[in-house]
Image (cartoon, rainbow, N blue to C red; front, side):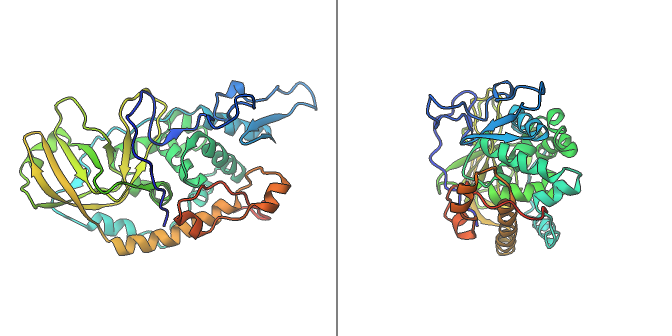
Length: 352
């Protein structure tokens, strides 16, 4: 199980998110610029003659093909947006059917790489998307976890240049249908990008106007279910909305954005049973009780993460031969310890 322990939330700053976009700030000022910079800063000189090469910068300059350069530049320039919660993402009847249904179809669930290839995305493009995602999003998740976050939150029009189906992902996340419609994408994010929250950490859900009366009718000790992948804020929103304040969620998925935004947004990881602790005129406080179908959920995560790690180890991360000889493959224990997912592995003889 991936335990990507988070540092305490800083005071949100304009244009920043807890899962920060990598700005290359750990590089020496005299060294080459970060790979996450706009495309026009990448070391490429066009196609004037045979000596022309395309290069990208990760921890060093790397020569890539024109197609790889195109994929790199596209990912680097992708705008990332927070979802807008458009429907009620909770069940006040305590119905566990959606969680059971989500798990019932996971026996042969494709990994994100398998899913993307089935959609017609070439494996070399997937490989470069992972390298670019690793540079664009500054977190400890594996590359596929970062890629899943980028795909589900990127601008629909610009994202479809990478994955045609991408134009629906952000809307499905906002509508609460992503887990049902795009299982491989959603389960990759909740498997690889969930990080531990502090026991008393509070997350806020803005109740849709049409559901306010139902929430106001709840009494102390009533139990209900919060959906998986529900957009939550880390600070109490201003503006007179009815707010559900949730305390005790064990894990959340941190989102990145390129928009100017003073608030930080996360997603709930899984279907969570909550119990009402306080009821006010414009606020309801609920405490986490348990994950729905938690044993089955953890069993699935264990096997699915192992498969995602296998895919991660197949990536050609463009390291030199010396680095490949010294670096090892990811193993479950390394991920469980929350260590950085940066190791390189030999290029696979056969792609997926």
